[in-house]
Length: 576
Image (cartoon, rainbow, N blue to C red):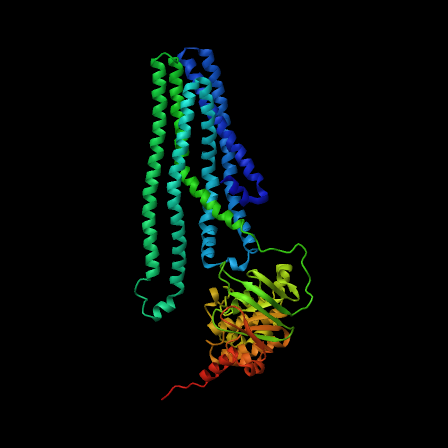
């Protein structure tokens, strides 16, 4: 657990080492204070006043040291907690932006959300409230066991054996409780995801008459959480009971063994009484330590989840990044890739997009069109082959250089809870208001500005909730136009748009094609025909054919069938 803390703190580990030093000093002083009670009590029972006063002075000195070290380590513990929580948020944020975008699945996003809220608070409270009793009680207990060996080695051995027994009991107890906590953690993530889904899916639920009824997936996961919580409660009771029984058993064993030594005249009565007092004092910290075992185990698991994220390998950066040699060019050469080992999505895909041209990707669902976009943007690294952007392997470019060459317009548009102007400005932060207005006008955003109550300065809501789907798409296109990147990846996604929005999207594609290399996942026949080349993907993860519209129609094959099906569907009409 301490190693996990050091990982979280990174280069600021000295604060942890300072706290550990003071907490350990406090524990040693506490243990020595308990040991001094033995000769002090023995001197009192032997009516040796001078010795009693001498040991009392030592006791007072140790108590003073305990007070000072306890105060200092408490202050340092709180500072460490606050520093850890602040550092953790920064380190998580700094590391997350270095991870491959493909790492951010829905499950992992839920885990990061749990870590950022619950995990951060748990880690902070651990350093503020749990480290001190653990370190102090462990240290003081070890000091007492060593001292008992000097006072009477036989009782010392019994105490040492008891400490081992308590350690084993604490491990068993914490394992039982921690397993239930892990299950509770998993179901908590599931509950969070379902609650968010329930809130976001209200339009769909209400459209199908489910507004007044329960949402079964959420109800099921809540029921699972309830049952998991009950199991956790019973396991906690079992673990705490095991610790309590073990502590009392050890204390009873020390008492019984000491009584046998006294009855058989193997120990002085005064020393035995003093040792009994020490044993009673000894079992207190040990028992508290055992009770903290499950909490520490849960803290360790929480810290491990955090360190697992922090230790996730960042996307590989080249030692010597290569400069772009052919701006605007895209080349995919014998690419193989699969999201799961042994299940390739792309088996052998090759094509080249020349600078300033438009390439349309067509093919059945699951043929790898979106996957190619992700590989071009290096959301993932290929399993085989090469993806070149600007004439250079994407793995030989730093992230800033690669992303500076690409603008991406995807079907699932996300807008930030900010003004309309700032959502477009993301495309180029240093853009002027005039440049933003020009890009917006081309993308058809001007009509949106006119209807918003506060124009450009109107917040669009989380995810762009104040805008329609087509309007969000226009804003996304305006971003791409404003960025002016040499390569644009465009998921046309016009099939669900109304004619007005579709016209703006089509005009924007033409505008982008005049100044950039455009690669588009084509849905509309007009887009396919306008392309300089068409890459036809098959359902096996390969390339069926490459050529212009006329060439592909002339050769027949999969594209010709695709074209005839679409043209036939375009001529359908509703019968009266």
